[in-house]
Amino acid sequence: MTLHLSEAEASTCGMEWRVETAPVDYPAAVDFMERRVADIRAGRAPEMVWLLEHPPLYTAGTSAKDEDLLDPTRFAVYRSGRGGQFTYHGPGQRVAYVMLDLKRRGGDVRRFVQDLEAWIIAALARFNVEGERRPGRVGIWVARPSGREDKIAAIGVRLRHWVSYHGIAINVEPDLSHFEGIVPCGIPGGIQGHGVTSLVDLGLPVTLADLDVALKLAFDEVFGGTVEPA
Image 1 (cartoon, rainbow, N blue to C red):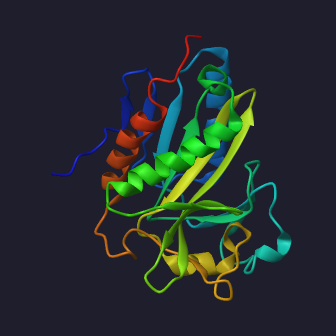
Image 2 (cartoon, helix red, strand yellow):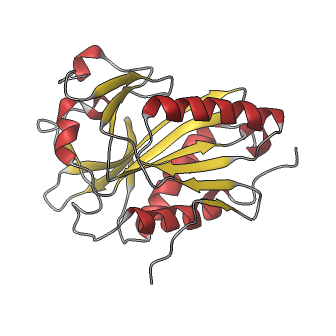
């Protein structure tokens, strides 16, 4: 049986979960996140996980190198305040923007990033996919039988007054050729034996809705019960 999250679902701890059914333009998404971060900090809104897709585009994090944008005319390119380098977003990729009050969650940024990694790994495990961390490489990786290591998920976050935004992106069924316009997260493919993969590329008939349920369950395991009273 396949489960589905409703368009906006509140968790037991007052967290809002929102799922968009149509692609969201990147500037509109950033504008929404910045307003929501301000509302969370002011106590006007609860924490939020926002699940969506973007139209095909590239974003550049604060560490992005110009030479890693291999085809600047292929898709729109947005300079982002998140950490990291270049990444691709597009249809078939689940983006999860995570707006959490880290002061109420222990105030440990390193732990927060580790928890994001653990969240992805736990969600992938529900499809019998072993996602792994790699020293010196951001994101979550999958070891292929050939010995090649492919990236299946990206992480890039920003904090404003201890409230997080931006988040993670997991490849469900994107057009993997779209990654060819950049060096994803500064990691060259081919020569170093690193590439990009997706759940469908791994032979799994997973939908965005399937992944959304896995993300919700895994989030409650990794982050649930850690919020201190305001």
